[in-house]
Image (tube, rainbow, N blue to C red; front, side, top):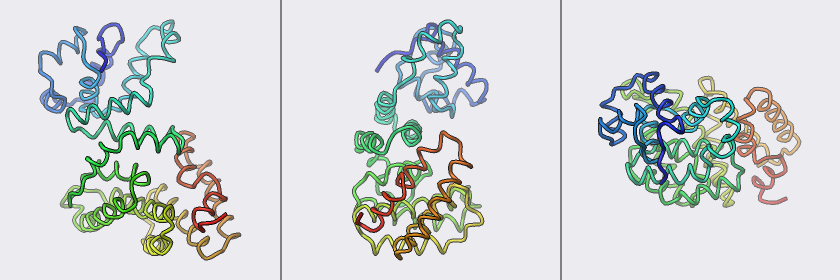
Length: 304
């Protein structure tokens, strides 16, 4: 793992900025990043260097996305230097995956794993996404585990990876997480959980389980989950959750052989995505919607 030199690459100045901006206690940072006070302050003051994994752990402890940190460090450079390094200094997606896995292995911090999965989801094609996740599969399976209680980040990681894991494994974990979230929904005020997180997570879990079932042609299971999802009131859903519910309605229409109706609904939702969502989110929704109506129809009906 490479070293992040302080002065030359402006990382210490960027770290100093976020350290003051986020107002997180030094004690918390030292504990979360497993670094001594003297070494932390030495780096903060531009002295010495840090391993990439150590710097990532500090940035994660600050609650800052690592790519955002790198971007800010880049912008601290004089303008004449930026053009020289802009194509090569940002951490590639492949390197980000390697670094996140290494950091997890060293410290069991899941934040960097979640961050890199989010970046993959927004920027990688479906084929690339599958390959990245397969490369992380051992780590992901260790994180999602089989415990009865699931932390929020574990749930988010499962949501980002479940379609690329073995069906029998995700079916088991899906049932566990649904039961867990359903119980927490009744005690969200006491537990500190937010209703939006619970509801949105349940909707996304159901939708992706429908897709997972269709991928292995478990049509009866997909139909059953879809019926359950459509019965959930949607007034409290986010835009994303409502979009997934609309997609479920399209799948149900297709399963009933209502081709024209489902195609019209699909076109309406596609237009809504491009109109309502930022361009950065388009690829994410294209993957959710199977890229085009014909590919969705093939998946749902099991034939061309």
